[in-house]
Image: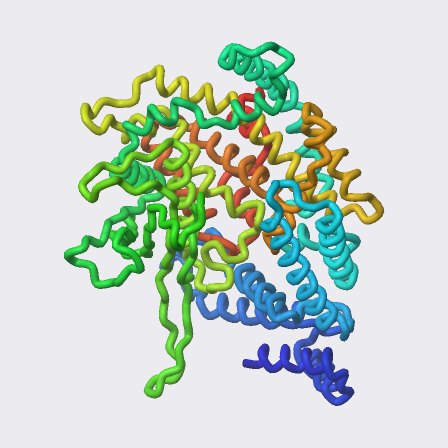
Length: 577
């Protein structure tokens, strides 16, 4: 309560510039024995939380410590409180340390202008019959968005919007470090991509029986983007119920979590569609203690689902909620996590027909379930930093990517993927073809991701460079094989900006680097060694999944791996040794 009063005082001083309130603030500072000359909400809260934390620890220490063993925690309670407080203050706009009284109003007006401009840009793209937006109107909107974002960053004391976004939301806060990763990817992947393009062009010539002059890079790329034929052949081994069982068995093997479905006969919860299913999670290592629940909405519904829509939606954060009651006053109740996994799978023709998944649909459902596990296995009691909340953007994709990497392990995939009629495992030649296709296409995929990530960083970092110059520079560095017409197409820029909030797509590559390094830890102990895999999986759950946003992602990963992640396993996984 005292902390809330103190923060309220701070806001009064900040907004009204009241001399009386400032004197009260100075008195509060003296009461806290604060050594700093200016009391800010951050350091005042930290002082209070530190005292409270020390007091709690003193009260918990028994007279004879040997009689009372302490449970090992994989996160610091004070760190959790600090991160939760920073999230609250930042959301309320009161974390700004400088006495800039016009900052909040300026930022709100800037955000409003950005939203309006992005809406105009989105409509401009939708109304064009061709993919390339109208240069005359779209460029003006793009420059306006970037200028407003740059002004916002400058008003908050940052050199560029890229610096502002990275410092607030990312684990890697230095844009130079991210650019170095992109350049390394280009050096390793570009020669491989050029070799594959030549192969695809030769295949296109043979397939179409046309002369060499009529086959272009565009033909090669359209060929490279076709889904591999092996994915269709694998569908007969990937019936939906079989995939779900294999996914839940892997979850039990790694994390000790048992997943049970709520049957229609025993269902007490309503769903928004008859195909939506409900599952509950239980802790195998703690006498089947209930952990969380999630909805699974697997099938396409064109009337209320967008195409290729796969996501995990956190519905309820697992945390301590304080309720005021008439009889007992304040009462703390533990709420259990609830999530929703949404996929875009083609439903079967008939209710009793089997539902077959392509391999990419299998990867998608594993990926989204990995997000759901990150949300549901939290043990942090502060909802603001529980589960997926407050996890750095470039680390939030790491757990689901790790979970889906197990699909490329022969033992894991063959363990559940059976032919729906014969019950036979996937043949060795089919699995080998899957791995070959993955390695053949992964270099092109990560090179395009590096291009988009670097383009977005340079757009938000450069101040005196035109969009077309940045675009051409990024094309020359990452995709020199593109034609001059393709390099002049700035629809990539529109795609980056039109989503509204900046994504900084480099976060996907950074998460993949982290997930590949984590998967290498399982490979080091032996993926067929059940005892070691179980121990390492439990460690991953305790140090990363359970903590969520309760500590920095880099610190959580160091507790799991014993070191920072590196790129070696990432390049090995993508065939760039």
